[in-house]
Length: 331
Image (cartoon, rainbow, N blue to C red):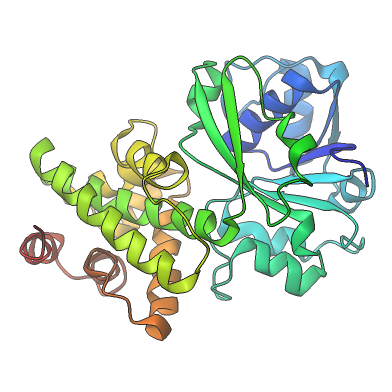
């Protein structure tokens, strides 16, 4: 396969919409899979996504929409997945077309729930996609800022860096820069953990902890992230790089961060369930906290921040009590 070939964006949310905008900035057309045919119909009438990033107007002549996942897989060479991780399996379970000869790009910042697997590992084990045919997208890159064409940076991870050189050209324009590295697992785990830590940052914000504390918190979160990722993957990395630390900072501080918003609601006194209902969007760190907690039962890395969030979300412990205890572990 000569990359990128025919590109498909898989998903209908804000990140998928931003990715479609990026692809169309460098390519003549894009295939776009959305599960709901009515969403596609409304999209065609309005000229923009009716539900997400409605300020981005698209040229309908350059988009081939699909509500059938098998058809879009058949008609595409490179598949960019941007569905929320909790729903990935239900989409993939519908696929009957072999994917071993497709190039997969995961823009999903989460793990496969229940399986506790990296997205790349899931494609390899379940769908026999070679690791050299899988890339991940990481880094501080909110969809809302892509919509506004604000300067952003991403990192493409693949074990075969030469293979994705052509793909990097798809993700480069006036407002988006990119780099390439081999640390696929590190990028994936960092993408999960930054959501976990951002919920805690939001909880602390909701409880009116100030900027001084947040700086100390994020310093400790970075150290915890390093300990865990180094324990599960021995690929050399600099955790201070933008794909790790940068993504953590923007998710913990930004007003666009749904994980921070979710945490802030809990910190203000909302129950976990009520916060989820009020959000009307997926805070992936909720699922990530459970996945990483269960994975860490094997590695036994010292992760007080992760454990604190797990206690709040899944053991229903008091956020006030848990966070107060957590602060005693910081330096």
